[in-house]
Image 1: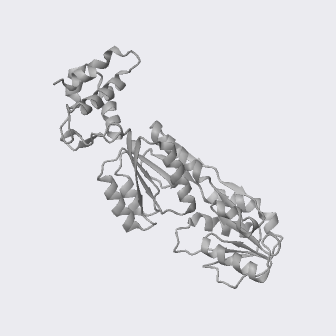
Image 2: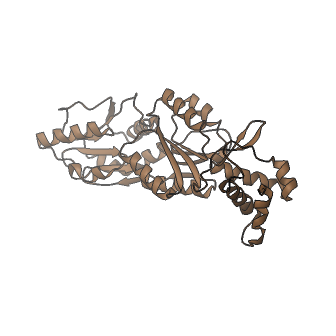
Length: 339
């Protein structure tokens, strides 16, 4: 049986292959031909340098590539081992999300489609609960994925956990979480973007008597938006307040309602229909995070949002290219009839 060195050297006659590509493809061929099986130890970096005459950087880069594909794993002080023999799978990705609501589903579908059929994707949910987050995190970490794509919770334990993942294997999406050193992210920004939207709507908001923002402090809603709202009404001398929830039957003319929970939005619109109150005329309605149903209900609800489809596509592109990405997605105000 041929050795791994011979399998790599067989590719020397392909001029279009770099040494890195010969190294990776040679290992894949060796696994396919059962020269190595799952659990088998691999030659050390020094042994590969001696056997091939490659630079240390080339060998280390090759092993990292094989790790990112989920084919091999590194065990502390023991070296490298074969972790998976499914070489048709170019990459094994763990996606840890908040939950599947309408806009998170937009992210998922776009992310899945952009990755393509050869990428193995496992999806997990933490529901904004730090205990669940930690449980799911430890589960996916112990499965040795090539990439970890994670929507974090703002919590001290989250940072501690994320700092244990190698930076070349971690991509944060949706909400930014500051970590040690350089790391990859495709996220949205809440405070400045929300304030800019409020200012864009300032003149039309002032046509109403006041603005009411429904916000439950125990929810997962970004606290940065709350501070932006408070700063906006203070700076622009607009009468406004924050209430914990919308109480059915309490709709009043002359009010702009900033409603983000869909259940509360449906109750508000139901009350409008019952009392013949017209959104956009008698009251105003604003909502965060756009989704297709908001184009239709209430004759169109004004929203502001990032494109979760674009976020999913961009995150997948970063995973596939393995190039560093540090991107804040643009937030867009979508004016409809409600405001």
